[in-house]
Image 1 (spheres, rainbow, N blue to C red):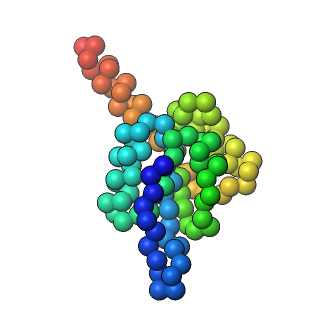
Image 2: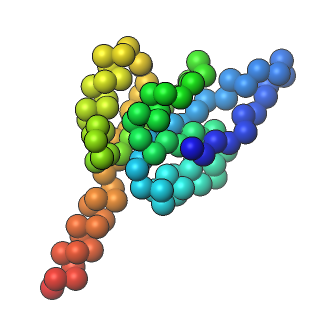
Length: 110
């Protein structure tokens, strides 16, 4: 898991919003973490849906960038599990890497 040190406000609390990233691809987690850090956002990255569920998540504004094609519990199935668990969080489903790989493979065949 990758985590940025939280920023404190005037009263010492750490209520900075968090972007959660769940992706089984380490290079994608690293790239997304760097991207969000570059705009000064706090990031917590997880390798699996299970790891995310088992984590302690602070009660702050947050969103989830979720890989659609996770091994085991897919991103869409994970979204359904979050709904069942009454975890209310905006979700961005990511499938960019899959498209890029297919495009590259198709281009190489020509």
